[in-house]
Length: 463
Ligand SMILES: *Cc1c(COP(=O)(O)O)cnc(C)c1O
Image (cartoon, rainbow, N blue to C red; front, side):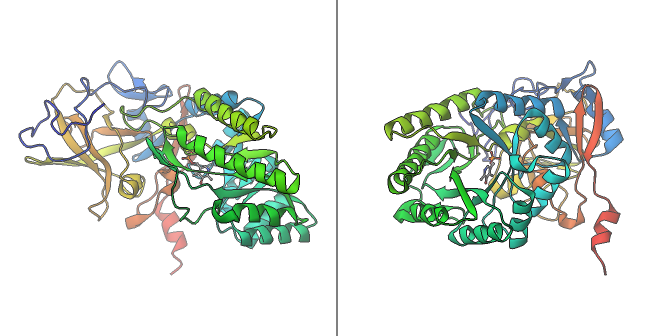
């Protein structure tokens, strides 16, 4: 859909400011199933419901802001990925998108594996009973303590990110009398974002070991010589919020090229390749993400074709979706406070949260949708910017959207697709207390991460 600077019908329509907005939807009360969790709808009174519970009831019970997470939807999406990739491939949920013990148990029950990238994430995974052999440990600067903990726990793989780490992990594993399964993370010079990818990107980033200049081959050469390491495969992660599969095609081509070089030099066919995560979701109605089965089919065809070309056995594929599983399953519920129309510009709608519960708009210029949730309205659409309550003018939750013109303090509004990278990147800026995550399912709600309290804040401040 083309973006229009002059949509029809909004209030203050005489001079519309610049922005990335499409014309308001015909019906502002409609909830596009693309951007909302599966069980979200409206009840007979027009109140938005999730998991069969009205948001008015959720707000009363748990307060606002709150992340409302649809457990059935999470499980459906996790299962869809699992089923799409079948038994010849592994799906590692990227815990950094959002991790809690309830989520770990759901993943375990649905047969997914788990990526962690810090000691804290590892501790969460282990404390919820995720079998260590189904955990992968990532990171560009894992501490010796973190590595030791992961090796002792028996994680299924550590993804090695540098030459120093090859030696560090080998040394720690050896000193513990273990042989640690590892993958080597390489950068293949592909950078992918949303609708575009760059096949000749500079490998100018902190993650991975560049394929360029033979560095990745040298990393494999060194790792194969170390007794503490069992080199099981190669890892590549090319970007985020990707819709176009052609970046993966180029990446797979280059990874398989390395596998072939390794075979030719060492007579070893590495058994696995991990193509990372980064699959996109719909934040607005303009986004059209692929289904897991389409992604699985495309990736498997690409890898099989490349391996046939190189006369290699097809390795076991793994992928690491984070956002694509948890992103669409939650929305953030806010209460409207101040509503400030700026004549000829737009109306600023202030909510009781902001950049402390959703930093993505400020950080990445991310786009979001928003809906009036506590009632429906037939009022004319007005162009709004949904902002938080923080002392920072970049504190924007939804940059450009339309809400009904009769929006008033006390209304509840909901911002969909906030399941990924919102609670996990939340902060205490301005001493905000981070919102709870409330899981809803079959008419029941339960808190899986509770709201922070003043005591929580003050407990850390030891005077
Ligand atoms: C961030 C990350 C992921 C998950 O990315 P999503 O965009 O949430 O799918 C997977 N693998 C690695 C190595 C990552 O850094």
